[in-house]
Image (cartoon, rainbow, N blue to C red):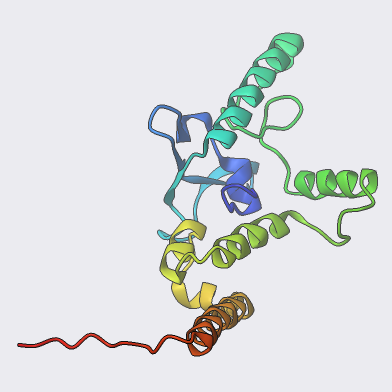
Length: 193
């Protein structure tokens, strides 16, 4: 969820067939949602939510190791293993419940007291978007990667964009201060023509 900025349902609905290891692309195509018949792979809410994300080498390695782990689990459980084809299944290979990521984060927070309190699954997505903005990625690209509209990203993360603007103005101010302190006269090029 952190490295791809996925919503909880998208992360739980990510299938191995959605990952193109050769071309380094992750296709966000499905969601895990509650239906009248229980948990099921469902369609995403909007067309914008369907997206292709680049697969970083670090995440590629994590996913390959995870896939090997799941293959070992399936051998251990044998006929009790339910192969749902998802990257993040429950302990028997089926679809993961909505509460499972929250419980996992709580366990991590209890084990590591140095981490900030109050984290939840959506914090991973929020961190992903905030990191993109802090790195100078424009709002259109951020919205595309997050599967949201530009107005939603601009409104939700307005504070992050304001911080980027302030940092940019600091750079401009520093540059002009350096020019003003330079003893050599500033020469402007004259273009004839």
